Length: 169
Image 1 (cartoon, rainbow, N blue to C red):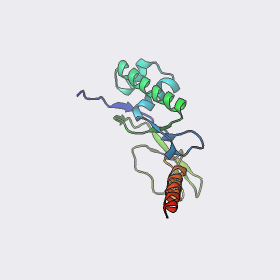
Image 2: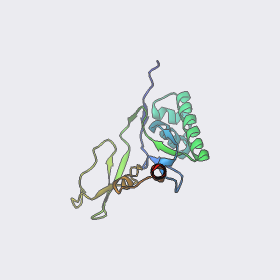
Image 3: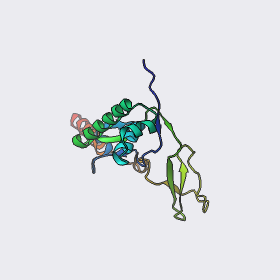
Image 4: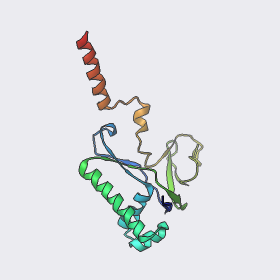
């Protein structure tokens, strides 16, 4: 097996999930983009770098960069055309340390940034409050889970199971 070269990544997405509107995530198929695939799209399509320059920046050959870029574009096209969610996670990469994450204090509205590889701050550097949130969110819908959100798909299956057991009685 060939050793896969770890790509250098300098920026991480602010959100890690994208999905069609008004369809619960549990009802969708998911296309998974690796961190290095989204970096290839960012460099080439968003920043409009030439492939040679983008490949150098990621520390890989132009051919490898092109393969990563084509694979990423195909996954995005598949998700958009076929109504799939897009999850951005995983991969084999090295953080170059340029990436920053922004946080907001709900107490004093102070916004600050921290390096991606640092641990999550526990309090606001301005007022000391622990009511801090990552700007952009984590994209995983934790607010729904914490508030006992139930997927409509799960409700249907439990409802049909309940109805089936009532009919048998």
